[in-house]
Image 1 (tube, each protein chain N blue to C red):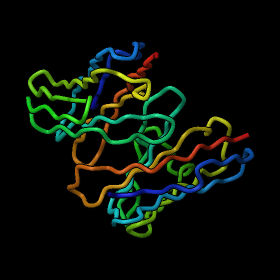
Image 2: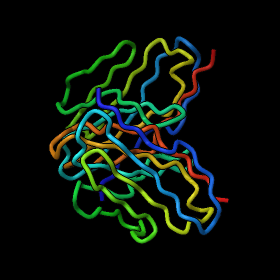
Image 3: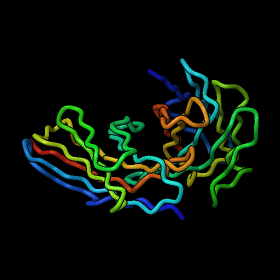
Length: 109
Length: 116
């Protein structure tokens, strides 16, 4: 059975801090790993990672995949209160996504 | 970009009634649509995968007679919760992908169902 595990479960930081969210997976027929941000409604897409060691960056967010360690990290630098959300990672095998349990991030002013 | 809509965004119904939720891809043809369920403070759980014109594939533990999925066209899939009970109250999210090899799934905004 495919498994995706995220850590920590929740995190409280202050504005300006840098956070690192972790995602590890055990998936057969792995194709890619995706990161999403979920606020009040459906998840919004952040990154898709297919190749190991290549960092993807978007503003203050960046992510990298380590296929040897079967894991990925999502970094957020200079956090803002608007970054407060649940961050989900998901692996894609075939055409299906398996989601991790999410990390709930709260950024305090 | 690819847009997926869901209707309604919020519904309250009485126990025993049925509720239909629509998922539409607005600017692309969705050969595959996925239905997820999310309980409060939990992650998304895949309920079923549907390909246009064929029967949906349900995940283990999901009752196919209770959660009827129809994917009759390339832009529309529906989820009908039959004989709803309070424990069916949840957030239901659909997503759609444009072709069988696409790496992207585009999510709808979700439907919050409350069964009283």
